[in-house]
Length: 404
Ligand code: GDD
Ligand code: MN
Image 1: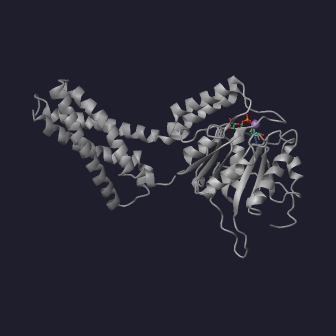
Image 2: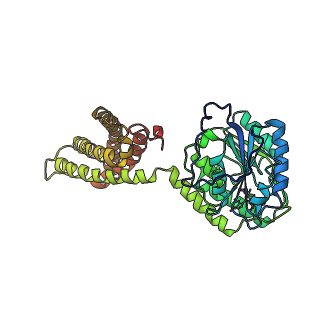
Image 3: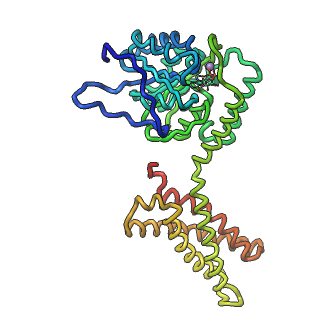
């Protein structure tokens, strides 16, 4: 670490909120990446900043001296928090300060800080000492044990809130319950999804574009990151000694909006709608052929035989549209006739399996339950559409292997 680091402010990144992978060290230097970058977002925390920086420095010097950095990201606080922090730099050379003047908000502040961070592990802690600094060492050892994410929690052993009003407790739990209903696969993975005190491996979130709203960045990290192992550490949420909380009703509204947005981001909704529209065009192909072949007034063929031919022609129709449109972004990365034929073969096999299901269902609905043959056919088609979408998504176009 250079001795005479000028205490200039960090540049403020702009553009998408995306964490870059760790840049390789410039050649000819023995500069190694830091092990840990801890972001301290601040708004009007000038009274707290000297103390939090001192406590964190003491703690981290005891485990990873010279291998970490503290990054204060201040939103141009009127009490000049950024300036107070900047004046501490000569005393704490591992401290860096960013002063944001355009953009605002807790979550984006954290991400802007991570964007300039040099550490392999990224973290966030409040500046107001409500997050006990000593918990950081337990979080760090969770990461050392192999966790991708280590989150401080008020709701595991050793955790709690010190002196919250029943109303705030109720709102906090209510928000969590709502989260569980809307987004169980994310919110259900941690006991304290509202926690703003956690560490995450950079590689788990590098390259993902974050779209955080308001205060809750942890659900964004779990929702969009590639997080396998989560470690939790209990902590007691301390009373604020200086300054004031910035939480208002607006944060609760934003939180709900955020959950809904993440919900949609996790489901391939747009793709399913396209697939559904293509399937709908297939219904007309299927119905028309089915009518021509099976209706007593036309060819009058058997139900099953007519259905198989009608469906196969619908499959060809659907494949062409899906390959061009529904999964067009993926097909354009898997060019060439051979690959297209391969996709068609897979699509066809999956759809044929779906067709077996379709025929069984049609027979059940028509012969056993006695429904009108066209109504029965419609129901069978709808059920098989879901099957077809999921299996094709996972196998034919392999969306899971395509990085976005
Ligand atoms: N840069 C920046 N911009 N920092 C902000 C902003 C902002 O708009 N708003 C708040 N902060 C900083 C505060 O200065 C503080 O360091 C931290 O973010 C948390 O803000 P508080 O206003 O103190 O939040 P809280 O105490 O009510 O909420 C805490 O508890 C929640 C658990 O329910 C925070 O830790 C949340 O992150 C946590 O989720
Ligand atoms: Mn606070």
